[in-house]
Image (cartoon, rainbow, N blue to C red; front, top):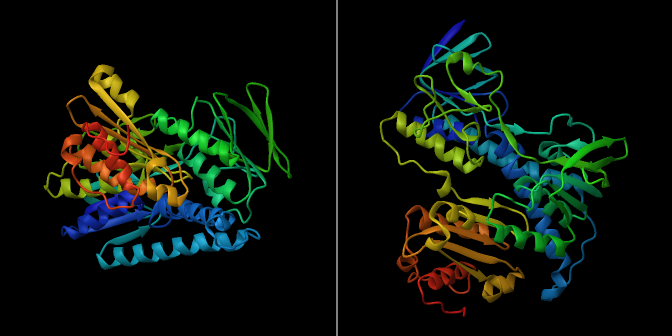
Length: 457
């Protein structure tokens, strides 16, 4: 077995892994990056990027349908599934080529193949051993399914959904979280009949209930059906379609069943526990500095308990590289990580929901305001409805910012800064927001919490 030595060995080339590799190389470390598939991981190839390209195509279709409303003559004559897929794959290919070039330019050694952690702080790939002064685990996640429900044929996960050359005529989506509502939104805009099945009482159940209710209302107007508070019982498929059974006795017929119940940590068959890395429900146990229970072995991204978001993994990868270098970077708690669901309307948030804040501080210690986008000129121009909701502690800082409406994901960075810096509404209410922009709605909410509302009563 040939042995290779590096300052840092990274197992996994997704958002967390390649970010750590790039930052470590920037700090003068020698880096080996081991990836069994393609650099960029799920986010670039089968997740964030291709799904957002699909959602953009869906938005274009909606704009064409409504073009005459703004005086533009246009007609939607159909959706070309093959060209749509080509568009998505073209975006991914450009980003992939750019990432490959960046990694090469930083002098990072990319090792293709399946890696297994060894007890002596190395990663075995085939007949080679890559030993690091430090090792980072960043192997990402996989699409989960319900026990007994096998993926295949017309029962698909998001990866298979993106590979389709057609827009389904009818589709049932199992799961009303982020992945489920994004595909529901895109497919509905492209002409499909969509039904979401969610066992909990609301869509995007991890968000503030105000946002969930607004999204549910918007989806009803769009003709997206949602069966909430009902559990999946089973599914049977033929060559022509699939029948989905619910515990209330309902049977739903569709061309495809999309299973979108979340993602599990990809930690199996990596030799982790044998190497002294403790797991909990498949996730890697880490301390607040992302150290595992094995000496000089770290973890980042979807395998670490908490939010499974590409930008969280990206930040954690940078954090580990800087921590190894002795820079003592500032930790970013999940409550300060922005969250965006890119359906139409978009859902964006950062910090605590009102219910979470009530549980932590007590109802009497909180104030929440909502500002309706109906009062915002740019939102009216865009033809979107929605709400901005801000939660603060009484005479204290903002602890949560929650938005729903088309394009509001672009506003969440301001919310992140306010929540992350524990700003009081009075601290930020005086700052100007350009007119006309949707950001003015966030400014109006801060003004209201500061006791001086301008455009609301």
